[in-house]
Amino acid sequence: MDLDLALLNDKPTAITDTSSTDEKSFHKAWERSNRLNLMFMRMTIANNIKSTIPQTESTREYLKFVEERFRPADKSLAGTLMAELTTMKFDESRSMQNHSIEMTNIAGKLQTLGMKVDDSFLVQFILNSLPPEYGPFQINYNTIKDKWNVSEPSSMLTQDESRLKK
Image 1 (cartoon, rainbow, N blue to C red):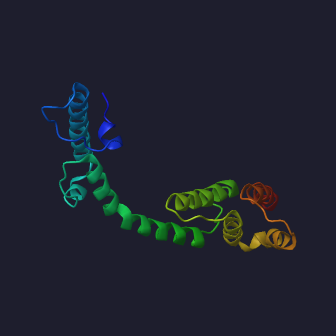
Image 2: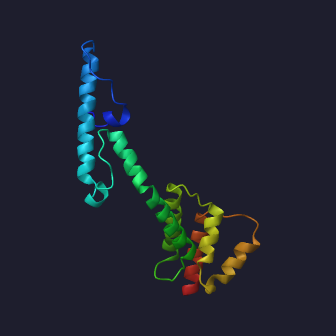
Image 3: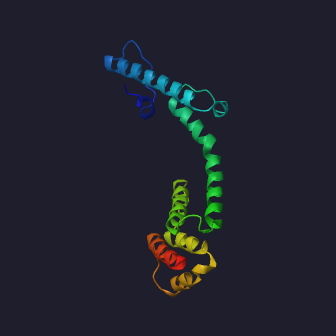
């Protein structure tokens, strides 16, 4: 059963008396795939969303309408994630490593939305999220000439966190 047939191929031309057996079987398979895909999509999409998507007879068209419907949501999500990344503070409710991982995950989500967060930029966000006790660590980072990737401050901050706890 080729469910993706209607997604991967354009709608075949209409069947005529001169159509070959292969063309007829492809048309029949495409129609079945298209019908099943549309039925499955309409069943799985929430009713409040479904009502905003126009009825179409093509799986590809339906997906285009769904994509257009959710494009503004991506912008909103990107704004929310940027605000979260820029205002996040380390509050010792979790480990330093988990804090760094969480900030890295937010940057990864932003990247999937088309907003690349450079490693040096993310390192700076992580350092800016630290409480005053990590001041010497920040001064040390600012005095070295090398730029760090995201994994370097995470491991060093974990060491500094254990030093501060002692």
